[in-house]
Length: 489
Image 1 (spheres, rainbow, N blue to C red):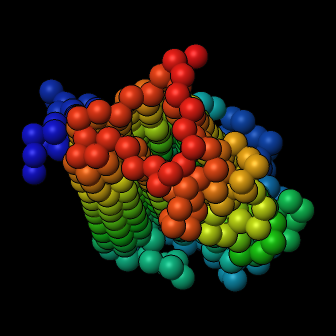
Image 2 (tube, rainbow, N blue to C red):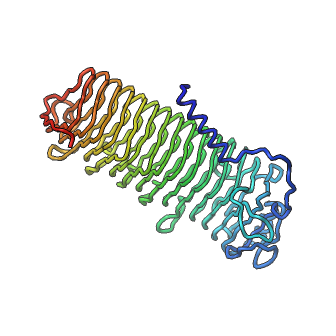
């Protein structure tokens, strides 16, 4: 492992330790027994009180609460309040709320309020989650919405779920997880499935402020026909993918939005998304995953791909970012270093039926990747600015577009494409090409290579406006493409 990658790991481990708040207490503190209880109340009740306002008694175990609910079967939306110092240990077994048994309750929303500050309190602690230690939490065969807040599940080895996951939710309603931690399970971390939703639009899935670490399969797996929102999520060192999202089970073009999330050190992809609708990545980081850092495929629909803020892909075993889409691609501030495949690979040419373009703005950095730093295949115009591609093994920029002859097909501004093995800039198009204000130098084979799309002859026109190619193996190989040279505009 080189020094740069070692530095990544130091930063990553520091972040994970900080996020988990792994501290050693100076001395044990007495636990308030009121904070170790569980109680069910109607959803409208904000101050849980045993045997009042429709609430059950308060119990020391979820087993006892489950027995009471199985007897009463309340026919209304409810909340299970779980004390912040509650621990469901192996002696209590896995906890399974199954709609095949709770046949009345299953049709109503169910919420788990972990981190409850206890009897006489209505607030939840966001820093002290309720714990499932060596056990799993399951809600399945449900119809109503399911919400899980402030739960930590660690070291689960078995589950009552139809799918082997430490936290498992299967329902036809909406699913929401907030401040959920799943750590060290020999199973998958969390499995969320509401593909049976019959509402219009289909039930959504939202996961926020959560963490999935060192699990025996995927960290988090989502299956839905509805919109997916993932925000402030870390998934790392899982034996399969960090996070997988699939919302392409019917024709609904539901969106996927992933924000401020971190995927690190997973055995397969860091993040894998298969969707019908528009996918948006905002300030996403994927580091040191053994497969692709982030893989997105929404070719089953006609929606777009958006990348906002700075998205970073470092040291992954295959491509840093792989995008396959039928729609347009808009990105800014892409950073891809030291990936084992392409730094960034974007394809909206193989699958699209119409001419959708690719636009990259902000400040793109592509360095030290095994293949090209940036590879784009499109049916529409490719427009990029402020790109730096250096020291990539196969080349800097590899750009191909099926845009027709009469179209401004490739526009590149403020480029630094230097010291790459093989090509600096490779452009393949039948349309017009403009390079504004940049350099290609020190590339082993060719600084600037331009061809028609078939690769057999010239493009229709090339403007070099303040662009220089020098100190390359061959500075320019243009196959007779007509060139107009001017100063930088």
